[in-house]
Image (cartoon, rainbow, N blue to C red; front, top):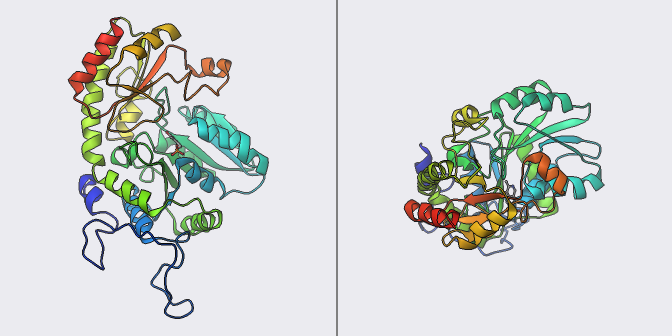
Length: 378
Ligand SMILES: *Cc1c(COP(=O)(O)O)cnc(C)c1O
């Protein structure tokens, strides 16, 4: 089954009881048992809910794994996965991971004795160097935010397999439409489904897919024990969003290509960050491991003042955090998503004050280019 078909026919198609082609919203907390322990597969909705289950099955298929899990947010998903570890365990993460991931590792999970180090995973050797006796896993984000750095998942999988470590990949930016980390050797794939999977800026959710039954049992134990599950209404909204993921990603790709071509030739733009550009340091890896380069682009206009001017003139790019929606969004990472990172660390990472990040949406690509043109020409 090809991807676009799987988006529609993957998981559980419709409702076996009524023939409804859309999975109903099972707004229910508990289920009648015909005798003690004699039930139809559902007992209590924290443990399992039919609508959530349909979403989890769909995600499992889309990522080519063994079991899927839906959580109340991307951060709930990441936290649950980290709960697979014990006090004293060590995890190596991409140095420019999502800010919330950095925060939960360094300010919450550290209090429970889970150690984290952050390295430039786009250079696989830096992972090898960081492996300690208590290292249990490598957590990658690729592409990253906002500099769109790419890590070679297959290369890192060689290292994790040789050292019996779990390989986890935050696949939010690429989506399962363009990139399937499990096929490349990952054990666990994570998503902030709030972004492209939902795709309409109307739901907060997280998804996890694991490649192994035992991992699935362990994660279900954590999910059921800690309870950060996604409700049936939001599970349904996500399935509805996922059905159009293919057409959205294709259209976003086409719009992004136009925009990147425009930005790279504009004199007011000092630098463009996009994995689809041949001069991107990991362009070849991006091309090899993903079917598309995605709709996230960052560009540097030189100063905070310039960035503010551009932002104030844009009409179709909405100033907002988040990404991956039908409407184009714009942000200044240094002042918004990455403001909590100390200025010095931001400079080290290359997140300058003049850096603008856009999430390309589904408006007409020519309107988006014209909008950027008039804003940059001010
Ligand atoms: C947004 C995001 C998260 C966190 O997800 P929430 O749904 O906001 O909790 C994690 N990773 C990446 C890459 C993200 O963009």
